[in-house]
Length: 182
Image 1 (cartoon, rainbow, N blue to C red):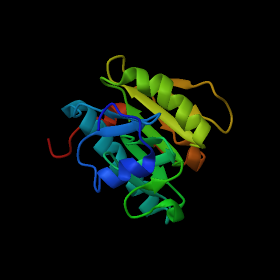
Image 2 (spheres, rainbow, N blue to C red; image 1 turned 180 degrees about the vertical axis):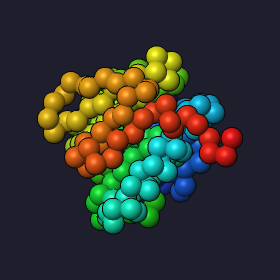
Image 3 (tube, rainbow, N blue to C red; image 1 turned 60 degrees about the horizontal axis):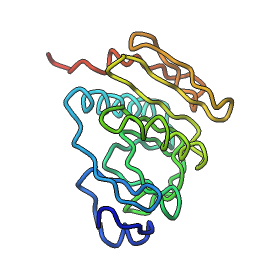
Image 4 (cartoon, rainbow, N blue to C red; image 1 turned 120 degrees about the horizontal axis):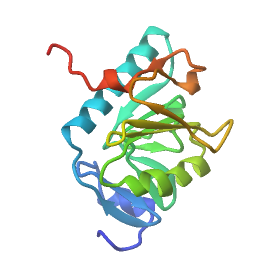
């Protein structure tokens, strides 16, 4: 099936539950390499921080991590590294049917997709906030589409305000790289 143009409905019919990292981009199934340890440490700790913030503040939003599918339109199904939805009605049981409020991608072998293709898709689809964490250069590109299409750029040691929550949560990426109990 990889390489043939298909719709999102066909994609879901062929993949009851996605276990392999893959996405449907412009109707083409694109396989992805499994993420490395640094990548996973950052994403899982980010997921934990987001979940704790929501729980402590009685929020109705819910965070998810890859390989959870997000159907953006009839020919694009992505698996963001981390995303938050504040619209529970978009959860189908199998995937999120619509744009998340917050998306974070940790750039790795698919760097051009994160900075080009997905940036355009997320903006067009209605994602409110998009972070690209780039471990190689230790920079974070934060897009808040409700105000600008240009990113704010941070380093790993600078606290970054989560804009969908008006900055009530700040995250320092360097802290996400540490494992508890070490």
